[in-house]
Image 1 (tube, helix red, strand yellow):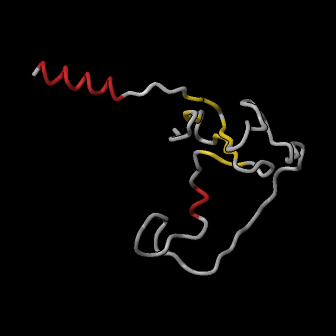
Image 2 (cartoon, rainbow, N blue to C red):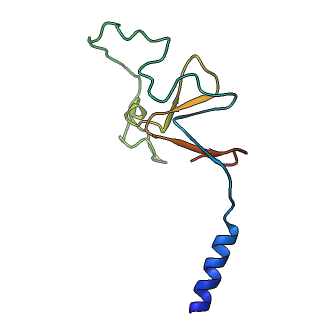
Amino acid sequence: MFKLILITLFISISLRTVADVNVSHAIAMHGSPKYGAKFVHVDYVNPEAPKGGLITFSSVGSYDSFNPFILKGQGAAGIGNLFETLTTSSSDEAFTEYGLLAETIEWPDDRSWVA
């Protein structure tokens, strides 16, 4: 039993690769992200814009489930707006993702994975 544990430990240590891992609030395909980690709003948004009001959306059709991930049936229109994504992009940068639900984004220098 001890021999098996020792072999498993040795294999797990030998398979581990040492790579520099970048940790950031955002990831850009080319260069670095435009906005820093503590940005309040993007440049193209007016933070003093009037707030409030009422908006109504309509859709044509019907549904038979509030679950949008079903294989059979039809999910309700707009139900996908209830779910947030891990990252979001800004409209003034191409191929840059900022963490929305994710606090940090990690990737190695060769970009073989992202976490």
